[in-house]
Image (tube, rainbow, N blue to C red; front, side, top):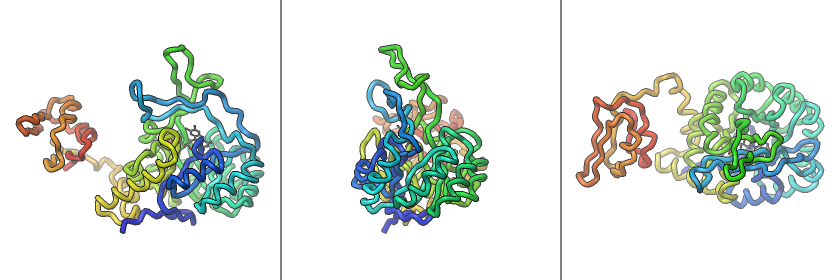
Length: 364
Ligand SMILES: Cc1cc2nc3c(=O)[nH]c(=O)nc-3n(C[C@H](O)[C@H](O)[C@H](O)COP(=O)(O)O)c2cc1C
């Protein structure tokens, strides 16, 4: 039986997929929807002492061509537009009625988190994540929150700065590190109007989604190598394969924001099912079996001697790899049932391995 239950910092999740602070966790009902959609744990939208006054528009898709929006989004949203009173009186209780572990997200200054931390704890949330997105000053915020609450606290880091140094400095005060927040500032222009696509004061926004994933994975792997506390991955998670990749980079769990905005609340269950399926197909019993497996290879030992190995049982002669072989080393002819890699031309760049949808090519 494949087991994807996940436990970290005393939180027990039926699967490693959590909501992330954002529009898909903006109030109690949205969090209940996520629960209905199969999420393993809840993280609520960031609250602060005052409701946010957000610009409009505040979200723009990063499209692939004219349709689709798989690459991600830019956003100029801030924290919750709901008052802290509304969250304390109503929204957390609704989310808690799901029976799932609930993490509140709070910002921003040490004074603000000191004031709000005990109120959040009293409201019954199981842990608190604090955002350092706009303020930096990580350890001061961590110390301030640690002094006022008993429940686990997590620091959520931005990709900017030296995440390893920041994570190490936080380790004595927090129960886990969440990484990463959005990257930016970034810009998109609507070419039909000539105006920035976002209504922030400078038109800038922050990037999330698939385009952010490699940055998030690098941060998670570096942090996981450097601290002993759990690391929770967020940034571009949209499939079971993404959960597996973050787990291999050392993540204890994963959060989903952009993909849930684009696909809706049933995404969480789909990702959890795909995670189970992947483990089953690859003969693993649980996520523990693969956690951090990539870390020892981050020392230059992940090398490729040309040419890559080909598994003809998996190859469908689809012709994708020769198109992206800039060295002209691959010949595919479906009519002649032919697949050939020219050893002399192959430069071991690895591109064919990464484009093959059937995982037919691999490193020796
Ligand atoms: C529209 C939007 C609003 C967000 N609001 C918050 C927030 O209130 N607090 C926070 O810590 N992160 C916030 N985030 C960041 C996400 O929680 C997440 O860290 C980031 O988007 C990367 O994950 P993703 O690629 O799955 O979106 C927001 C992201 C988006 C796209």
